[in-house]
Image 1 (cartoon, rainbow, N blue to C red):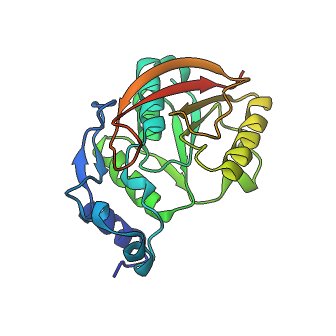
Image 2: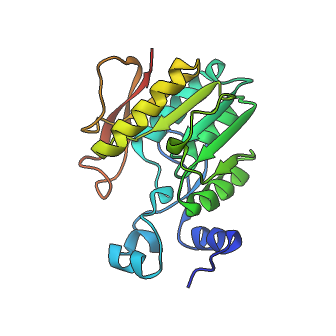
Length: 220
């Protein structure tokens, strides 16, 4: 059983992953799942039995890897600024943003296991990430945020529409908005500015191919 406490969730994440360097951001080391780790082998039924949501926090998704790579290579976008990493998952984007010189990053995800993963991963990489489990889509975009980052958020139509509307509000309020996307079906390429394109190694267990063409986009 998992203790429903922050310490219990951190222990679960540590026990069911192993430290790895994502192929597209080898500067970072994260607690991730693969074919030899327990979370990888759990079925949906087993996850439901122990009350665990889908472990998005256990993988370095292509959209997040691309966005993290772009920020590490272009630190001037976030240096000295305050940022939000929306749907943070493992925290790869939040951590890269701090490594690029951001003053503060708030990682947001409604899954409390993400809080555990982000905390462990931030500690491993020598940075401190703030975290909220509030659903930011129910709130106005934070006025203090200079930059809002979103990796791989268009895999479901209703969610994609809601997130993109919220990101549009943030852009209208003056924030820089960057999105990492590996060609998801519900991502609207029109009306956005492509900043970079990468070939991101991934896994056939997660994606339909071993390398995903993944782009970083900016809301103009």
